Length: 387
Ligand code: PMP
Ligand code: GLN
Image (cartoon, rainbow, N blue to C red; front, side):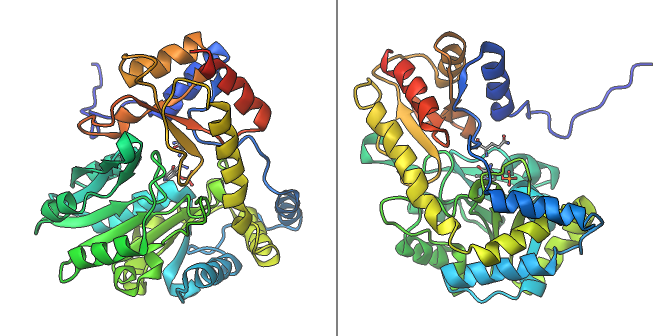
């Protein structure tokens, strides 16, 4: 007998990040597709991890996280966002932001509940909603600045929120477009969810990478939003360590209690020596993350300057470490075909934006990661300028 399985996620294939990284590897292409830095984490942080392994911090950490780390996270959000959160009852360390997103959705979404995401939407949200029995409603971001910037379309959001809406997923600073929120946006969001039972999940993994003197507006900055929010971040982007998979979720005590019911049976605890090392490093170098925006703004500017003579059109990214380029003057191929072809033939891998949309509306846009050393950016730009 052949054993078959009827998939719970029949529409889910391999992620675009895996596909493009694999293709880049096969063809020796410069990989500006999957978002990971070519820089090392700080030496002191690496030394601390080795130290904690040496001194025996190698067994299970407490389920919500090592207390020194939940305290350091609470201190950080108080300093940056003015939010006093209780490290014992409102902060949970999880296995990357990915686990925080998954556990939040499993904790909140019931069968037939609706979850709103903004397209282009990071690919981890919808499968988790589907597994929870929920239905994902895609609300496209509005296109601004001649097709080169994106923002929330408040009218569309307002009409998408119904009695069935259980959760709205936000991701600002936004991957892939670099869109950010303003204080005004937080107010408009608060007006829409006021007097409803809607929860918010805010994926803020790029919280420390915002350009042009702008400030990241965390949902933690707004007391009214905070009451119903799960705010998720990751140390992967902040410390150039995407492979460590350590993140956290901040939510009010009752919401955190529900989150932990899921978290304790999803991963239970997170890698102990890395938690201990992160706590020390955050306490001793609290300014490290504050330098990140300037660091990546220089990288963005380097890439944009290198591409000035190219036929790509773009507005410099406002946040994250991704630059979106409009290739309409270069080719009329579909973005998925073109990103694959250029990986094979030109030797530069990128991510097509349409894969993040239910109804592709983003046009001819590709995302390029600029978290790379200058030599790599120069090599890639040379190839792109020749197109
Ligand atoms: N959310 C967004 C928007 C991301 O770009 C990523 C990828 N870094 C994640 C979540 C996942 O973060 P982590 O690697 O910490 O799970
Ligand atoms: N977040 C990363 C990106 O947007 C990729 C994460 C992954 O590979 N799943 O490129």
